[in-house]
Image (cartoon, rainbow, N blue to C red; front, side):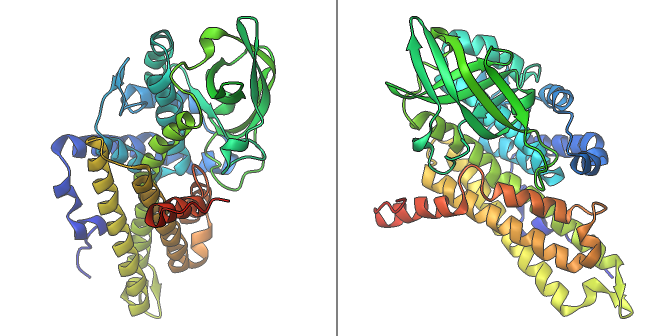
Length: 390
């Protein structure tokens, strides 16, 4: 038995990265190994995540809103941000979701569409992890079709009054500020709703079988009164929230591959040690076929992710290209997790190994921030010029 090559070495991925990008990746990997991996199985088992404590540590590393510029944000490149998502999701999708929702949804909404006063009030504290944000777009009856949202905001003198319900909101119950999208007489607008505002409440979604190491909540707004300055002035219509989703989807393009790599490397190590019929499982041709196929899909996904990152850094990336990355990489990551489970056999269903935990998480990643079906239709529209959403 010779020394094994790590899967991404087959593609020379490190040669495509700058020294700074490799350093950021290695820093997040080391943080994950020390601060996250020793606890993740228990967080998943208990369904409890110390989100506020972790936000402070992640903010201390400069990972929250790291791809944004100014207001205490690091201003890192797209690939560097993607690699951070990759390493966090290699531990657990819930951890990447915490960072993604904080930086690419809540912070990005304020950064892109907020007033100077809103940016100064919220972004530095959110970048430091001192305040946590959430993003309220999805509703119980309107996920893939946000245009049908029922949450409303009406004028009452100089104030806004919000009513409605949001569902499947990451960070919701621990958030200090919620970015809530609501229908007004002037189209869909975004509002900043501080925790503790009368009429605003959040409660955890119970009995999840996926993303258990993540805070998932329902937001309820009952006659929530906000001052005029709570509205995000530069966002009008669905282009606002959809622009935020595009930011978050980009992180998933990298992140899902981190979960896949963790599954594959765990499985290779297991197959080299596990003996069946007097030889290592890794020594069977069918096993090697599975491992080779998975390594190919992982590597191709990583090359795609880096290419999209370089396009994003030049401002040339399109929403259709983000859909290509999200659709392909999450779909292949989930297939890799499932295939790895077959090689681990019964051991693959326990929390001693991360494989089924990743697979369960990726089932959610497959459908949130645009289902595979929706991204297929986005790509189909780009290819044909014909919309087929309804």
